[in-house]
Amino acid sequence: MTETFTPPTRFAVPGRIAVSNRAAATWQPARLVEILRETPRASTFRFAVPGWAGHLPGQHLMLRLTAADGYVAQRHYSIASPPDDTGHVELTLDHVEGGEVSGWFHQVARPGDTVEVRGPLSGFFAWPGDRPALLLGAGSGVVPLMSMVRHHRRRRLTVPIRLLVSARAPEDLIYGDEYGDETTPFFTRTAPPGVRPGRLSAAHLEPYLEQPPAAGWEAYVCGSNGFAEHASRLLAELGQPVERIRIERFG
Image (cartoon, rainbow, N blue to C red; front, side, top):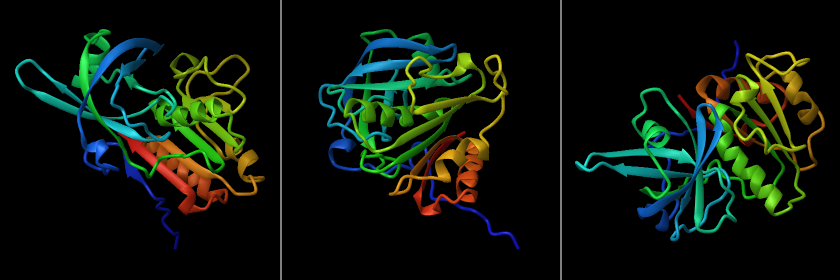
C-alpha cells in the first residue's frame, strides 16, 4: 500500500489566514505611487502606507477596494517588498481574465489612487532569515519568495538561500532582471536557445538535497495547486523532511 504524502499547507485565499496581531486587524489607507511592468501580464504596484507596522518575508496582506456605489471587493495578496522598505509595500499582480480586482489594477489604477490594506497576515509561510531556505516558485508564486531573496540581499545575510523559479517562457519570468547567483530559472514551454524546456524535476533539486547545509533546508513552495503538489512530492522523495516543507498555493 502506498502512503499518501500530505505536507503542511496553507491556502492563499481570503478567510484561511489568521490575523497575526492587533495592528494587522486595522484597515489603513495605501496610496499607489508607482506601477512597474514585469511581464506582459504582471505588474508591480508600489504603495505608500505610512502606518505600516512592518512584516516578515513571506507574509501577506488583505486589500480592499470600495466603489462609489459602496460595493466592496477584498483580496489577499503576497507582499513582494522586503521588510526594510519602511512605509512602503509592493504587490505584484497577474492580470487574471475576468478578475474584478486584478482588472481594476491593470486597466484603471493610476498613481495617486488609494485603496485600503490590513496586515501583515500569516506567520506560517514567513522566513525570518535565520535558517537555510530552499525556495520553489512558479509564475506569480515567486512573489513572497522574492521578498525573502530581497531581505537576504539587503541584510547581507550569510545563511544559504536558493531560489528555483518556473515560468512558461522567458518573457513570463517575473523579476527576470533582478535574479542573481542564488536563482535558477527554468521554463516549461519555451526556453532560451540551448535550454530544454520542462517542468521542475528531481535533477533540479538533487544538487541541493544531496548535500544540504549543516542545519538542513527549510523549504518554501508557492504556486498553483498542481505545482505545489508536484514540487512538495519531489522534495519529500529526495529526503526533505515533510515537517520542513511550507506551502502556499492558489488556483
